[in-house]
Amino acid sequence: MGRFEDLVMAFPAGQRCRRNNEVILGAPPVNNRSPIDHIPDPLEGVHFLVGAGCVDLVKAFVDDVNTDALSTLSVGNSTFQFVRSDLHYERLVTWLERVSYSNLRVLKLGEWVLFHNSYNLYGTLGDVTTLLTRTPRLECLFLSGEFVLKRPVVLNHLKHLEVVVSDLDLSGPAKSLTQETVTNLLNSSFPKLETVFLDLNAPRPEVRYRLPDCFVNAENVPPPRELELAGPFAKGERGRILAGAVAKAAERLFLDEMREE
Image (cartoon, rainbow, N blue to C red; front, side, top):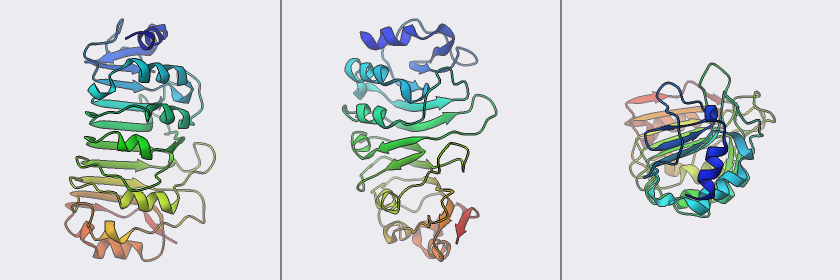
């Protein structure tokens, strides 16, 4: 495994662990997590929970690991915050997008893992377009923080989509997605989508999202079993969703946090 394994083992023993064949950095070996003294073979998942400062570690991961064999990948931080770092993940995403993940099922970008009670702290991911095109078998996608999607993508196996942009004003400067990114995300092709959770809350008063017709009419996605939307929307958007095909077949529909202003 080379340099990646060396860098992993350089973490203090209380800050690295494994769960089955997955490596977790930024969490102690307690509960269902075991101590780790080597990289498991096969390696099925990697969780970088040490903030955005682990560029060298991610570089070594890209160089040394057979990323096509991974089923789970996450990048973020946690309430342990063993490594004090900023939450600007753009450089990490730029490195991660250089390789393919042909068998990846779960991708979490910018996550904040709650090992104990705390606020969530979200950062910035940059442009995730290329990285998503390298995950053809993705089933669960979690995007936390501010990000850019420059064009619609095709994820033929995606079942769960979850986006949380901001923990209001608790995570530094105000964050929001552009209307272009929201439109590109909801115009993407997800033919097996089952659950959608979009929390687009943004402290910026000028932000008012509109939902693309393609999504409202369920032209690019099947009507999901669960649909939850939150955040600031333009007037009339709640009514459009309720009248559209995407909501009519939902077994569970949560629109109480849609704010029309």
